[in-house]
Amino acid sequence: MNMAQEFSALFSIHGLVTLFVLSVLELVLGVDNIIFISLVIVKLPEDKRLSARIVGLTLALVMRIAMLFAIVWASRITNTIFSISSFNVSVRDILFFLGGSYLLWNTFNELKEHVQGKQHKREVDAKPALYRNVILQIVLVDMLFSFDSIFTAIGLIQNFVIMAAAVTCGMIFMIWVSGKTSEFINRHPTIKTLALCFIMMVGIFLVAGAFHYSIPKGYFYSALGFALIVELLNMRMRSQKS
Image 1 (tube, rainbow, N blue to C red):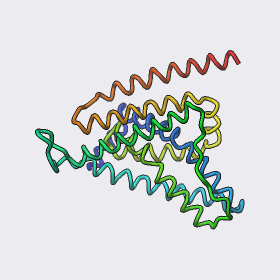
Image 2: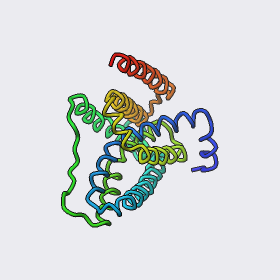
Image 3: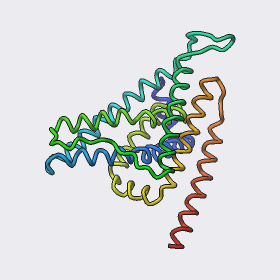
Image 4: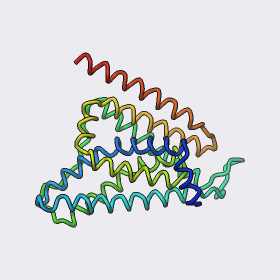
């Protein structure tokens, strides 16, 4: 893993575009986590809530980047471990297949609930909580629900520096505008629908990569940009009618 080369790629046009796309997807995917964290933190005394949020989310960010590094490292192991007929299978192929299948299945279920108008609720213990228990809940929940964003990042690019920067930017921005972000997405649910559909496309990219079939990423960015422009125009039309 050449960190210097990957860091320099961050400032290329492709790197900056990918950083922006991943940061936005991190933001959309993280809204549910912010809502959950708000429900957990409210159980603490008011003077401890800010520090619990900062400590919990900082530890969650460190754990997420560590998970990202481990999965990126594993995805670069291309040595053949077994063969099926003339098809060679590596750790990378298995990881891509499992990650892509996870994205497709998980995102399909979330998209179905979203379209049907069902609200996905996570259980939160209503008993008084200790400070360390709240922080532990924040870290564990973030780890559990970070696999979709990690596999989405790997499906778009294999640059660890860009992925880590996107995870960091997404979480910082999400914390900064958590209330407004949740309100905006609730007011414009089609934004989340659009994001979920494109994450399913990333799942298809990963599964295709597992079978050694490469889909040009330009198709993804072109479709994403076009759909986003159409949705922004629709939002403007709806706001003018209301």
